[in-house]
Length: 384
Image (tube, rainbow, N blue to C red):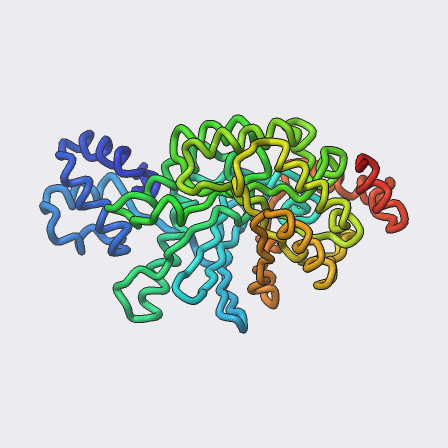
């Protein structure tokens, strides 16, 4: 059985070439052909010895993901649906902006985190993606877009691990993929331009700081444990005090001097003035260092199964003003690609759920979770 070379970072590829009786510099050449030039045919790698090309043809391959569909948004956003086998499909999204191009990459087929406001979580979870399947999304997007634009210049300047799945729950496969993104012989991305988004897997936040510190975004979405337990069930295992302490530890290794807190704005759930004031107290209680975190307020992208609604634009601005007036750096994310279901929280793909998530979430909606009249009471029950 041949191996997929997209599964290797440079050190792994060097080890593989050594098994074939080749020196390290051959691995560097091969790595450049794969990632910088987008080659998949060994015969096209003209500066490799013919003997090596024959070995590779017999023992290895370079396989991306099979493309199922492409959807183009009116705002320039592109969403790709990829087949990852066994009835599962995952999504990746390219977001072009002035001066940069951001690729949103999936790390799992589905997600087991069961966050209330995320359509991926409502689909359930099938499996972790392999390193090759994570990297294949970048490999495909980068070289597809170069060909489309008829350029040899880099098109993807930023990668965010914010697609389907919880990246830190797929840690073993994630780290080699990140290293390829950062490697100068690969995609040469800055650590500041690669972001891992997590719902708060505390032990792996610490591990990431040691193994491959990139920019970190944390899905916060609540100002107290009671509310976060409801919105992000992982909080029951890793409550806010533990999560924020891990964030501060991560800053010692991070390429940026702040952590981004993502906050999805949900009408009458987490968007009241009291929540904003509580957030201010929460982050100030952690450290005397100013500007150690940044808030990114995200307009909720509704889907029927959630039972939730988007906060009004006026409410979002009022919420942001409280944070800004308190000295917290705050931005409101511009929704992109919502006309093709490619916006934040909308990626769903097609997942053969191996968990009871869909059943549990339906149970939550039926038993006291959806009535609008009680939602505000739950959201504020722990507020002073």
